[in-house]
Length: 325
Image 1: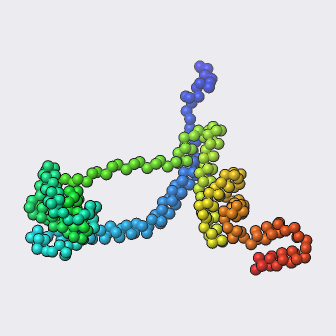
Image 2: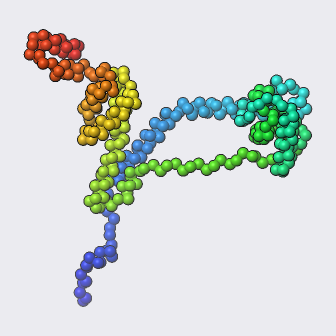
Image 3: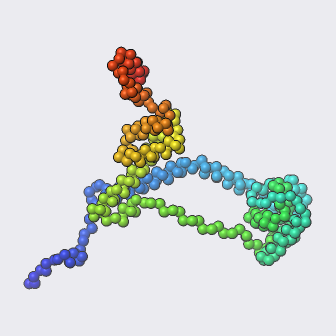
């Protein structure tokens, strides 16, 4: 029988490991932070949807109105060219779509621009029949009548042609070989990567003392930052309700500097915000009306050198009764 070999530290890598499952019924730190992050993101998305709901409704109404207007305009410009030629320009509907240059009438310049435009179409392999040219020219006349666009601009002609193509008004054979001159939109810039404290924690070695301490610090800072913003909102609302005072930019800056000078105070405790408010009032950044009656009474007592006199005690009792009422 062979003697059993004694394991050494060099054999640890070959020893099979059994994964440890969490059967305690309680969440691990990682599970808790992941759940908290999911809930925070869901709440933020829900709040953003509620905030932008009116804007989305207006945008939807505008899109519907634009589609209906385009449908009515397309209906007119699809009719036979013979009918369009018989109608006065004043009965055409105004088409507000498109960005055009404006300018006065100049017949020689208009003829030169029209000729250049046709040459550009020919060089690009596009052909407009006589009926197609008439349809486009009547549409341009309508734009000039209603919107005052310039008829000496080759770019205006190209924009008008693209609009009619989008409305699908040309009859078979009126337009062939057309390609849009609109450049393809540039790719959108990638959105800045959002800092994810969970991702940073996952990359730490939680089995080491330093890694564990760093993970606790990250989790605490993430929680503290979100709670601090929430408390600031509550404080501003309280100032508005209690003193009918809205924070000015100067007060915000002074408050930020005060917190920098008092790093040991806890922003999640009410007495710290009371100290901040009284300090800003003392600096003159906030008005004196941002003090409660109790605070004014305490300051009166502290500032008085005659606290033992009869008149002072009588006035003090009177002020206390007024506060109680």
